[in-house]
Structures are given as C-alpha cells and as structure tokens.
Image (cartoon, rainbow, N blue to C red; front, top):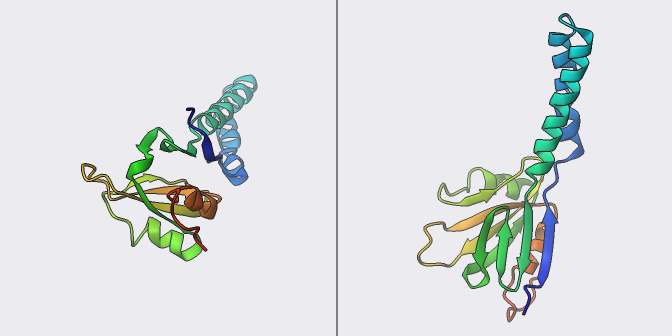
Length: 153
C-alpha cells in the first residue's frame, strides 16, 4: 500500500527575502566597477544568481502521510507523533523564544509566521517535540491528528 500524502507544504522564501538579498548587486558593483565595468556586472549577476539558487535549493518540504511525518530531511514514524499544536502571532513568537526547550528539533524559517509544535512519544528519543514553521499551521496540526481522534475544533 503506497504512502498517501495527506498534507504537503514547501517552505519557500518570502518575496522580501529575494528583494533583501538583491542588495548584493549594488554592493558587488561598488567593489568591482572601479576595477572593470564588465567584471562588476558579471560578478553582481553571478552572486545574486548563486544566492537565489541557494535559497531555492535549500527550501524544505513538510509532508504528512499514513506512514509518518517528513520535515526537511528529518522523518518520524506516525506512531511516534503525539499532539500537534498550531501557533500564530505572539504564541508562535513564544514557542520560538521563551517557551523553547533546548532539546527540541526545529525546522524554523524566519520569514514564515506560524509554527506547529509536534510532541514526540518515542521513549527512546531524547527530543521532546519538533517545532516546524508553517504558513498553514492549523491545516498541518489537523493532518497530524490520530486517525481515530475526534476532530479539533
């Protein structure tokens, strides 16, 4: 039986991240134009293209299926996934800050406002929970509910 995906999300960088990193263009022009105008333009284009490539190439994916949860490169079997709690706004800031347990595993992106705290029930795992960024934290938390559990309201 194939692992049917019930939730999937890519944590793409926000548009402002690409705009902010475009500041490498005038910075490299400032350095290289006095040496050679052609070199300045080429270096500016290559540096910005490399930054965009890294941002897109390192974009994490979150997937929930019948067999388990995958967040970036980390995977956990469904049977070890406990309660999932969605947070936004001040609660999400607290989860990433004052309420954060140093033993937690995190897939946090600063440009994504919501997070989901996913309890880990494996007695062999020293990690108490995963903290995962999500643009749709309520949907992710709902997808992580046990199949026989009543829906969260």
